[in-house]
Length: 221
Image (cartoon, rainbow, N blue to C red; front, side, top):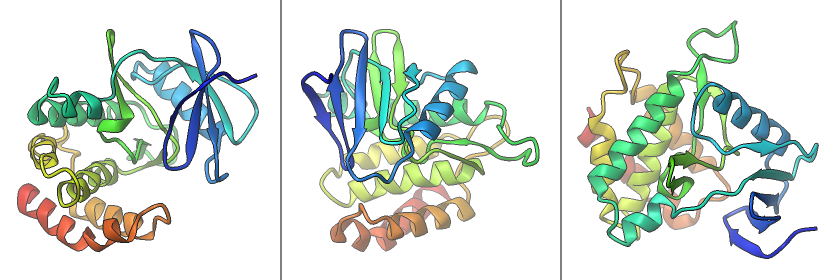
């Protein structure tokens, strides 16, 4: 039996179960909680800061560790975290994720991609950041992950939160680790295409994608 509603996103609601666990319930049936739980377990087993999960066997419900702390977005809006610090943290989380071994031995260049890593999907706990919402995760080239994060931040910069430009600049200042596997033109182009095709995007968010791409290229290349 679920407890009180703790929060709602674009497509899911999160409910209290007890002091240690929460239930995230998908509202529109687009996600796959079984696959999402598997990728969260995989990255956590390799040392990445994802919440613990408990299997439910349901494609629409995911039971996961209850985290205590503000989202990075809340900390930014409260002035507790600066844009440069936030952008650098996002970059470090992408680098750490792409440093994990890939899951597909037949695709040695592929890595686990989060594909929705932005300030509202990072919880700042007392033990360090935790990355949530792995609904979009898949295996692929790291440049696409960097592209998705950059496009999301650029859209916000051109929309309701111009200060996100500092986050974007700090994110793109990171070269992507020793292998230089950061943002690529191919990754950016695919990220823009995917955001344009996303039915969850508002008309205003889609309309700024062209300008978002130009902004990112001006900063990164």
